[in-house]
Image (cartoon, rainbow, N blue to C red; front, side):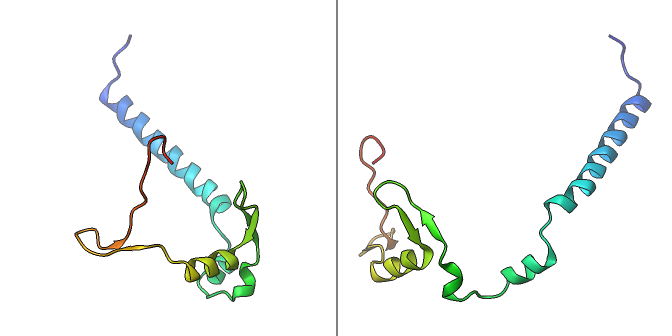
Length: 98
């Protein structure tokens, strides 16, 4: 196996970095969101915009986002009363991950 000279190593590194940078420049246009989507994401949305139904699987089926938020507001998670873990109670994990 032939040992590479310093010039060959630096040339290889420079060409690799330039090739990677060129690939990122070309690929960014396909990965970037349009300006209209970015501007729209900065505006608050009305509740009617969240009527898409999410499939929660199992016995829950499809539920709208607004129904999930209403349930959470009506049934907040329990809070701990004292100690260093004040705030939301951590779920108890039983054997088997349930």
